[in-house]
Image (cartoon, rainbow, N blue to C red; front, side):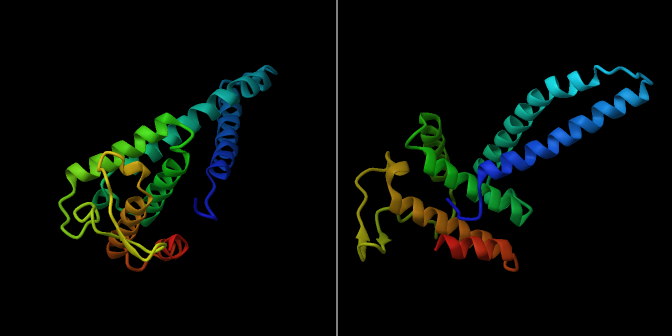
Length: 181
């Protein structure tokens, strides 16, 4: 996981913002309706957790869609950062959650089936360099790509290099890539 990125911090900050929005809309609707009803506090307090949960679900689904989207379809460097951070969180949580494990398997298999880039790591999967052992890595099976850390590392590095080629002046991508390396 990236040291400066925290999904919990994103959830808390987003929850505070959506709670502020919910409170503002509730008070504004109360004022527009000229209702001096003191029960607006109950509406805010009871509806707040539902709105926060809805917001967190929508945010996670959006991040999930971005993680599975093609790199060429993303028009902003911040969306690429969201994509790569979501892939990192999928990789980190795949050992504790079967849903996350299936998601990372699906992501890698989708990439394998749709990739047309001849320089991509999936094309030379059997000859990837393992820097920790200082030799070439020989993978046994293409079925267990989610457990092949060498392949995942090369896959993410290739994603970063493609993103940096697309957005060469993005400081966010350069910092993120530097921390990744």
